[in-house]
Image (cartoon, rainbow, N blue to C red; front, side, top):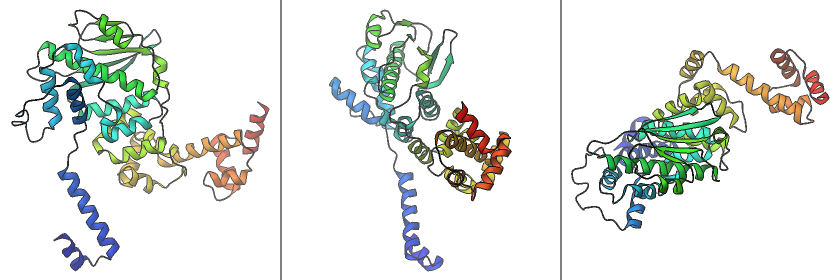
Length: 359
């Protein structure tokens, strides 16, 4: 029906008609298909444990609830031993978080990845209330996860759930960084009678206290580079996830200004106009201008700062002429760059380069 209406009333050309129909098919697919990322980890765990859920497990499941939600609830409430939650946590991998997982793998540092994780759990994981990163006076950092318990869970089920999240978090850190990071300590929710098996598993001191999962790590862990980092892939991943997710992550990253700065830094051509940036961020140009203004900034200011930083790098590290640098930073001629550089710094480009060489 849609294609007939389009051809008869809109007079679309054949390429435009194909694009129109493809868009409609994509929208239909996105509304009909829901991908359950956590189904596979649970299935792998059940296979290893030799467990088979009851046939009627999903018979009375609410229509808006994913199968993995009901299956996880069954696993938590029918576990053989609380410590088995550690093994279930091992089955969760970065790829099990969908496009957010791609953003995790392409983030620059573990600190940046934590911001993605926090945005993800606040939006999609109802079993986690919050994730906080607190710097301690001893030079370490506390990564604390507050848990939500589902109705009907007993104390043992809550502890099993905590063990799953602690194990999954521990393995996620190693998977992202690529090496073991010596933890300073781990706090698991109160209720464990013997923490020695946990100390052997996590290879750090473990205590059972309070209600949160708290990893005590060296502060340097936040600056640990991720080997698979790729700023362009990170930005592309954010462009495919939901608007709600990117809005939360934007707040974690420091606001719209910082998001635009990060976007420009990821581009080989760093100087698109504001309309292109707004389109990529799924905003109108007017909305982007307003939100930057609310943060006391503007796109012109961000663009000038980006050009200044790039110009300084080229003056300091290369022998390129001013004419060549002007072309690289998006100016029509060297004279325009010279004027802009003096306005930015109060010095000429020649003075800046000579001063740097003298140092």
